[in-house]
Length: 111
Image 1 (tube, rainbow, N blue to C red):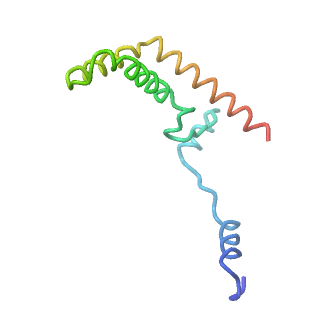
Image 2 (tube, rainbow, N blue to C red):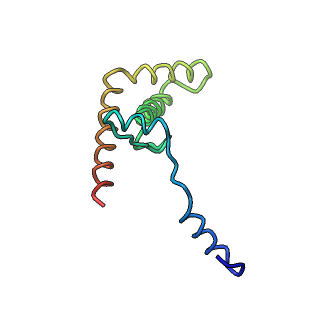
Image 3 (cartoon, one colour):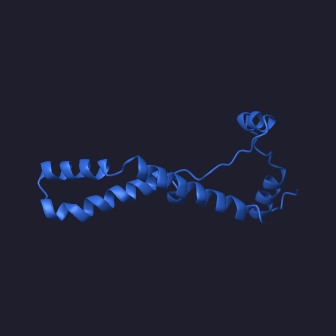
């Protein structure tokens, strides 16, 4: 490069010559015949807990108006809403999330 290069040209040059990150754990996993798939953390479509949390909030908001808004009733309604999130709901949300991840992964590999 020469001294008259502009910032975009320098950034392009830096990106072209940048070493690719290599994670030791990824290499270990690959050596054992597995593939690493990284998902966006906290992404609502890729985390079952986000679906469960949505269900808990929906239950709470659907029922809180009928019991009142005193502190003890609010706490009791949150406990009821969270108890509503049983094993069956969790399993459904996990299965749904897995389906979304598989579909996303399949579509991403089509390019």
